[in-house]
Length: 191
Length: 229
Image (cartoon, rainbow over all chains, first blue to last red; front, side, top):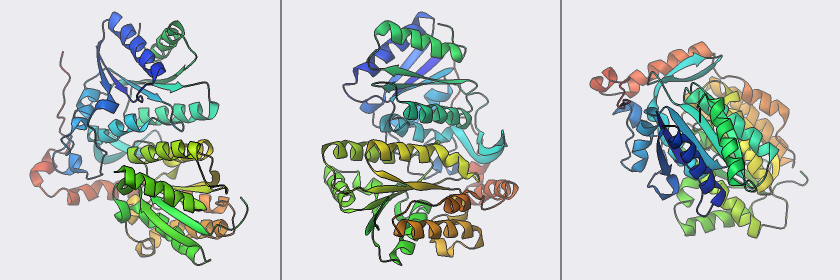
């Protein structure tokens, strides 16, 4: 089983670092192959809405920077984990720059799904989705937006299961580990 | 909000800049506000976020404004990464210094799907930003007209864009008086511009015209990545 961790943390964020280390440990100890991407260190430009991933070379981004490999890593995984400081309730710009490059993974065509319109799937199966939001302390408004965003992403990315969890700056390693196990169990990942 | 806004700054968050639907919607709002004597200016975020000098100019422009209007497309259920990048920078700078007067913020979000409600999370993100960066929240409008407008000036976008125009006119009137975006404007923006069945028919057919190469058309559903054991 393969997992990809998209780490959108900022430089010097110790809580994110601990959360990622604990997550990787938990997955690897249970037989997962984990590929983690430290997005802030990668050359990933913004999506410029050229749509050549639909109209010129279907399924492949036209930009030849490191963002081009993100859709492939994502869709060939069984589990995708988004790790990010909660930024206005959303993901950081570091994580978002990678997610904006994922449109090659859907088709340009639309379909009606669960009462609303979305892009049709390009692939028969997509990974389960877990998003971990990092916060100094609980912030209800930000967490509510974050959960909703993850819910919407699960529709957009056709995730067969999804869950959102939070790690706070005040937590110790064991508390973070327990939280990771809880959120992973919500998508059926046994650790 | 109190007092009449005198200087309104539109920040366009689409990578297509002034050729975008975001710019069309924002520009229409500004034109309507200009009728009431408001001074307006427009900035494309992607252009100014490329360099430190550009970021400084962006912050200076923000610090001269009474009201900011962010206009951006929906990207993966949220705001485009360069917009989040700009919001992070603006919030951080405002924690150091900001103008002594209360500035307000309005958000316009548009998407390529026919249900404006899919923009709700993006509007909530803007609202959360306003709170954290200490702007007064003057409301937001969610539009779903991308395929109808396609970056055309809103006046030239025809009958289908009538509710978008009317919504922005109501919003301009209220903002010009120093108020917030009224519920009537929100309701008009929320109305689908075309029925869903018509949207699906037209949107799915339109790709046939946009894909020039017949060989590419045959491979539209290609899967370049496969799982390996």
